[in-house]
Amino acid sequence: MTIFEFLRNKLQGEPPLHPLDRKIAKRWVKERLKRIYPELRLDPKALEKAYQDLGIEPLEGSGKSGATVFEITLPEGRW
Image (tube, rainbow, N blue to C red):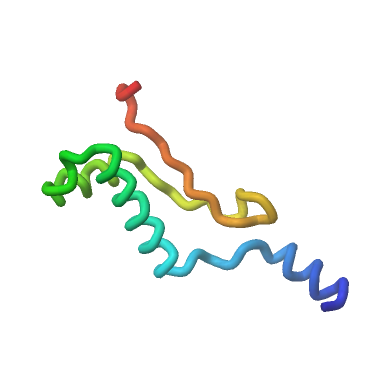
């Protein structure tokens, strides 16, 4: 790789997040929620609501070396 190719790749930034990666991340978070809150295991609607309440948003290019980071924003008034 030449220096020009390296610089071009770095200036273009991180490629958009693949839909499969989003799905994997969502499943991982839901599995963690089920472990932390066992009552959500048998209630898929409550599990989806808990996931939506977290407000997870991907921030592309925000991590180390321009990697995608998922930021969780807690609902107002919860803490």
